[in-house]
Image 1 (tube, rainbow, N blue to C red):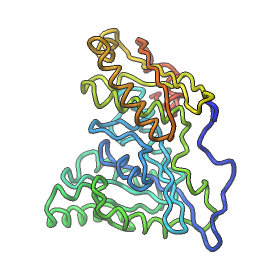
Image 2: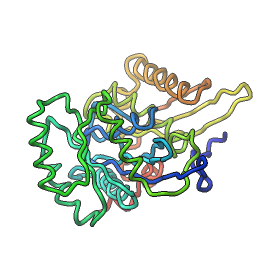
Image 3: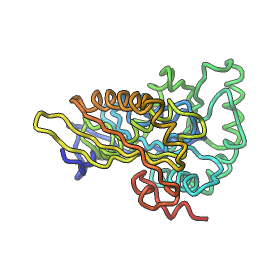
Image 4: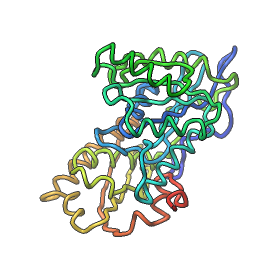
Length: 319
């Protein structure tokens, strides 16, 4: 596989004999509502970045899940929030764009946070953004509140929008996820599968590798730093022994951030490289040689090329 190979289908893939279904499901919600965790659980593998920090998903990430004869293509969108910077605006635009072509939309709401200002803003935007498109409600992290609170929250949310179905789930623990997946499988349009049965995602390998490294950085570094860095896979070389050499560049906005990323004696960058290499090796099922460098680019948040690498539209950051 070359460094330019995308994990994408060339044409619709026919499933087994009998009636098959296939469609797109967009996951929307506030940042940190659990969309990436739910996507990974549905797919059965880690295809989307998951950390305790908000706004970690930047581009629309598609994961492919099988449910009986149905193929469900989940679109994990960036969290919907009030944008301030160009990157924020591009992320929010990507989130709503990911919803536009979906066959079904699932709104995730955190049980313990309830109807926040952010959730209310999403509810207010649904009729204009989606028209009559069906939207299901998934109240997530149900283990954090009592049952009577859950019932009241579900009623209040359904009073605010006519959801076609309501699910109580814990994406992290798996509670209710199987019921949601089964129902979505039944709701997908009839038709041939869109991807090969064993395919998990349609991101380029280069971007998956970059996301894995960015996640490790996000987990290790201070709260204020992760949103001012990005990771790009600069080269991907296949070796004769079956292994791969992957070279990545970490772009930071300020000189002071470079030292934080490197760490004392390079300990931070070494730990990040080790963790990312191990995860990528497990994901690919073969050995990976990962090499990381750090470069200061003060204006990377305004560079069109950086947005293309993140799968975002630079123009969406205007205004």
